[in-house]
Amino acid sequence: MIKKAGNLFTTAYLLLIFGVYPFYMKQGYVDIGKAKYHFFIYSSLAAAGIFALISFFLAAQNIGKWLKKRRMHLIDWDKLSVVDLFVMMYATEIFISYAFSDFRKEALWGTEGWYMGLVLKLTLCALYFFISRLWDGSRIVWYTAIAASGIVFIFGILDRFSIYLIPLEIRQSEFISTLGNINWYSGYLSVLAPVGISIFLFQNENIYRKLFYAIYTTVSFMAGLSQGGDSIFLFFAALFFMLLWISIEKEAWFRNYFLLIFLWGLSAQVVRLMRLLMPDHYNYDTNNLCAYATGSNITLVVGIFGLLAYAALSWKKEKLILNEHIKKIVRKTMIVLLLGGMALWFFVSGINTFTGVFGLEQKSFLLLNENWGNGRGAAFSIAFDGFKQLPVLHKIIGVGPDCFSAYVYGLPDVAVKLREAFGNSRLTNAHNELLTCLINEGILGVCLFLGIVVFFVKKCMKKGTENYVFYALAACMICYLCHNMVSFEQVLNLPFLFLLMGMGGAGLQRWDD
Image 1 (spheres, rainbow, N blue to C red):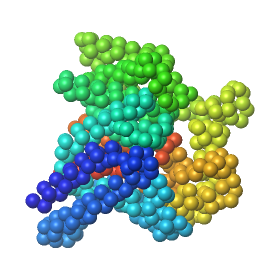
Image 2: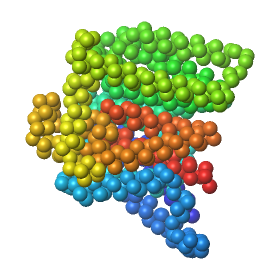
Image 3: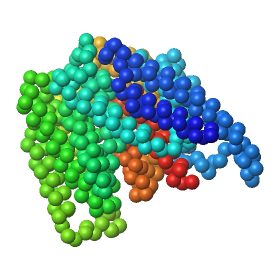
Image 4: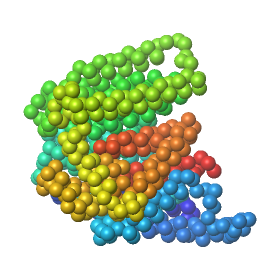
């Protein structure tokens, strides 16, 4: 009875966060970060208290059984996964970083407007454990997450074309949907969209389900291609890389992968058509990769290629021979191409930066200076300068959760660079997840956070052939990490990351029983 109550309450909490939280606003976009944070943290702290009470009663109910065990342990350590241990160590490291911080007041709740402090991060770690132990995997939560995110993406597409279904007094082009800044919007998309997009890859039996996920996938791609931020292309690259890696497990998945490529090209052309039909309605700068992709014939060619490849694989009589040897060759080739591409980019960028031999413009993607990535080059440089000046202890444990801004502005020479690069705008993070974590939580924090992601993905990839939802979760983690190489953690992506890990952990617990 207690376990059933725990599951019902966990389901209700997840429905609240996935189904209601993305739409919550207070006074429109005025202090939307603060409003979103208060909604999440108050709901989650209240839920965590009830989760703790339920867990206490469950422990009391089973204490007799535990005491009868040979080792007389109240905790069944065999039930703790590697991910569990990393989450525990990460939470401990966050607390140590806070305890030794020179900015404890800032570190407790986090920087104003961002709130990535001790309270939020410990709450997320606790929620991971509660959800992974109490939830039974109710499908209604998955459907709600997909449906709600799809509606958010539709709002975002319409907002970008000045069609506002939600009336607000204050409208600015950098604020879209119900999520606020386009970086927040892209962050939310990078975590939630891979769930529905990945599930589309695995649909073959039910034509109606396949059509539903095809529509969701198209909407998700359109949302990414229309919003205007270049960082979304890191998400696309990570998504298609992961799904190709996964799709070669089965011939039907491999066919659907090319259909996915077609939907991406189709999405770009639909946005292109909307821009042609409503030329005065598109309300964002067109000097970016999104505008190029949606105004170019390249995406049309990509879409046609995907459709033809899908048709060819569907009409052929012979089955593809995707044995283990071929899979290994394909995956090794993918890794070589990925590493080779990265090495080539670094080489060309380095040559161009130091010699200017290619004569590229000042803001080129291949010119590694302060202007790189819309000012991200300056943010990266400042983060490295700040890290070099840290004492050894704080290099290991950081200056405190969400204390990046408090620390770097306290360094006179770095503060001068900050004002030169960003003027009166306050830099609160390095616009790179790991660099920001390096300052806030140190080398140890970066290693533990990466450990959580790596071991969770590894476990999901092992179980994916038995239940494809695990593959979808693995894609979410990788897409989040890759997208945030030029972005940051915030209240609309990191909480969902931990909740999805908790949901995956619940499935892995049941699968291993």
